[in-house]
Image (tube, rainbow, N blue to C red):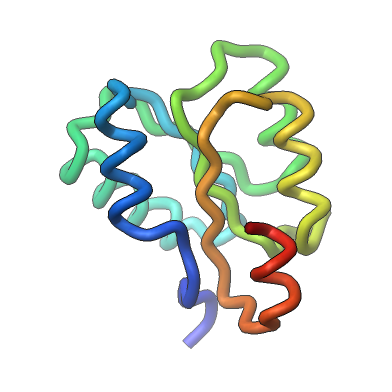
Length: 116
């Protein structure tokens, strides 16, 4: 079946973020169908004005450097150029105060705990 999210921050976290006026989200995922589904869902649920996507950590870092920073980031843990917590750490360096939600098919409880 491919890339199916099995863990994420969840709706409560998204509602808290949306309550702060989120209108611009960066989705970092290398699966175009997942990006499209997330973009449509988030736009419909939260009335987003802008949804950007990046298919790799390098593309996400470039987007963050070029600005403006998004109001929130949705990150897949397994990307072509990074896997696991390293992606979270890299994005945190560039967007320290931007809320970050992780999605992944990762089922390793140690990895999930490390990300949290």
